Image (cartoon, rainbow, N blue to C red; front, top):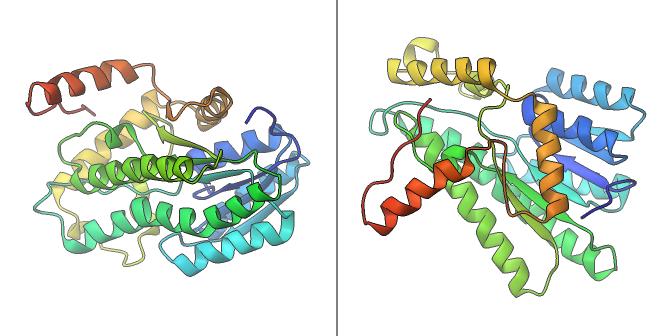
Length: 283
């Protein structure tokens, strides 16, 4: 996809962070914008920001862990704009901690958002996109947000790492499935490095609202380090969005917001070929 003007973008997790940056950049690129988030006030703020640019915008309150809610999002987008050209399955949360100390509820929450939420987006939108492509409107692209922690591991972050590896594998699988079906729909896996977002405060949207003391120190240690890193060294979300749009134009499957992509991946591949444990990332 080279030309975005007049096309329609759907972005989940658009109430803040990368999602909001994507919404603003899409609007500046002349797109109609459908924004979705689970947090009503944050969603309203993004809608207002996009509307102020003069772009056509619609906000849809959406819990991506609920397949019916994501199906409703897809139906609303197609009802309003007749087509969707850019789908960004971006909603995500962070859960840190030692793998065997995190409760099943911790694991389930992060997997429901970071993996199942992406799958729900794929299942709700791809059939409609394929029908759209058959009707001659096939300039379509899907972006799923994984993480640098979805291509390399890090200690004290098991649930998050596993969910993001699953997202990356799903994204590859979807790309291969589309090619096997003869579709030209583009697919990219976004692997952000440090971006100035509120990912470290994800528990604000956790439905079971665990009290702070229920989270073990190993979670708060890594969440604090992550929050400090993103605040001090994180890219502005609008800059991350520019990188995403450039990657789409270039036809990149892997879109990384850090220049250290090769530095991260080469030691991992070398260790795997040597049948050794790959090095872990550092916060």
